[in-house]
Length: 255
Image 1 (tube, one colour):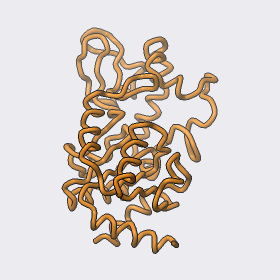
Image 2 (image 1 turned 180 degrees about the horizontal axis):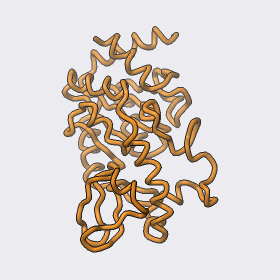
Image 3 (image 1 turned 90 degrees about the horizontal axis):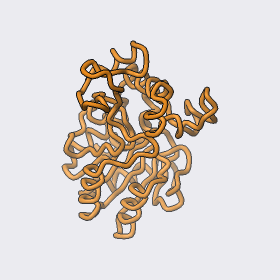
Image 4 (image 1 turned 180 degrees about the vertical axis):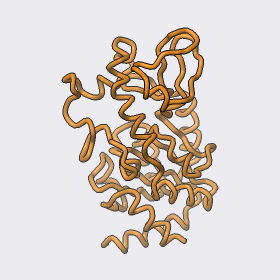
């Protein structure tokens, strides 16, 4: 199939489907100008200025051992998020969720753009959390103004006790939040008619399992990614274009 035929096929599947899971990764927010951790266009290809893999710099152990170094790169992500905005792809997903009451979003992104674009909070699973509000690792007090902290010397500290602040995100080498995992698998057990992989490398079990279970039950698996993810060979349709481009085309055809 050529691209136009692929769009028609996926749009028809969206119309038929009742339960839909949209799994979004950094490739979606890259269309807003945000950096990805790795891959083409990534800010952190190779090593950091300190000669470390980004996975080590942005890890839970590094935040505890050298908070100023970890916050150097958290601040880069935070500044990018503050200075960008949801794109047409986020808006397309929010529109689909308005029309399909059983359309769910599982996102690896920490920018909060799905909610900002209008996706219903009760059907968005932010598996890696968000960059704000910050909270103190010592006393737990929240400090909501990320932008203010980024304008001050890093790492940010708690006004109440002087402890180091951190964002409610899952850093490398940290566990995923149990509540988000429970919410995801409660929906996976109900089954999905259609799973769309959007701008993700699809390299984690919590992505692979829902995708393959949908397909094994007779549903459709669609990939939207200019590159091949770990599930590209299993996809029924692979739209090899940018996320925002494909999602706009799908919603135009869907409507």
